[in-house]
Image 1 (cartoon, helix red, strand yellow):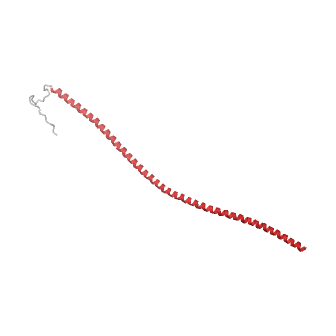
Image 2 (cartoon, rainbow, N blue to C red; image 1 turned 60 degrees about the vertical axis):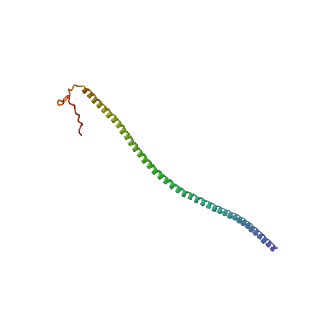
Image 3 (cartoon, rainbow, N blue to C red; image 1 turned 90 degrees about the vertical axis):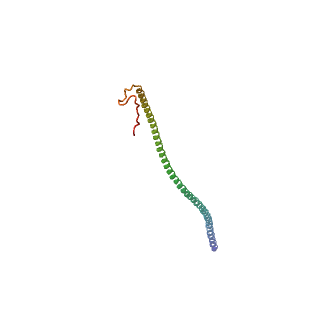
Length: 165
């Protein structure tokens, strides 16, 4: 019976050890399942990151290409600005030329107006002088010859000599 008791004790110890081993195996099985789940999740995340990385790289490349196109457009805009600046300079030159021409036209108009005033004054002066000569001639035409020079006879015609040049 001591053997039996010993056998029962060993059996009981084996049962306890087997139970403990079975519990540990169950825990390991559960841990293994969790690890497989974690590996699966990590794999999904890695694949997701890979596809997101590819998508981000494609989008980033597209944005870089857009920036390169924008750089070309910016250079075109800068060239247009330079052309506009040059054209504005030309416009300013033309405006200065127009101002000079307008100034010359105004001076010419002033000269013509001055000539008209002077011409009117000269004509008025000539008219006045002509009137004085006519009045003098009329005043002296009826005289009895008191103003005749001594060497000219009264019945002799007077010869008019044109002025010599």
